[in-house]
Image: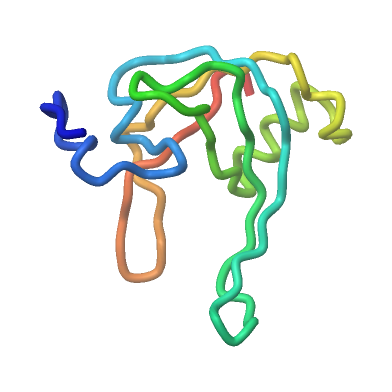
Amino acid sequence: MDRDVHTSQELTPREFIGASEIGDKTPTLTIAAAKYRVDKNKRGEVVDEFGWLEFKEQRRLGGPIRMRVNAANRRCIEAMLGTDAREWKGKRITLFATNKLLQFPGKREPCLRIYGS
């Protein structure tokens, strides 16, 4: 079924929330689960692995909000909620998109950070 889109982000939906999706908002979200993923190619070789959070809140277009957890955000969450990720369930964190850019080799990109950390 076709429908009109409201933002350019809807043209290329992403599984994980990013800084551009947050904009100048500061959503407070409830952690539903902390997970780890290993993606493999057709030959069975690992191509990516990362931790991520799933939140109870839903995206406007449906489906749970999910966020990849980089090392900086993991340390912030640990400082606030402890190192046992099983105990994070039900806890709330507030996200914001930083004006400072996260430095990647060869490129700079806006990134998500966590308030209160």
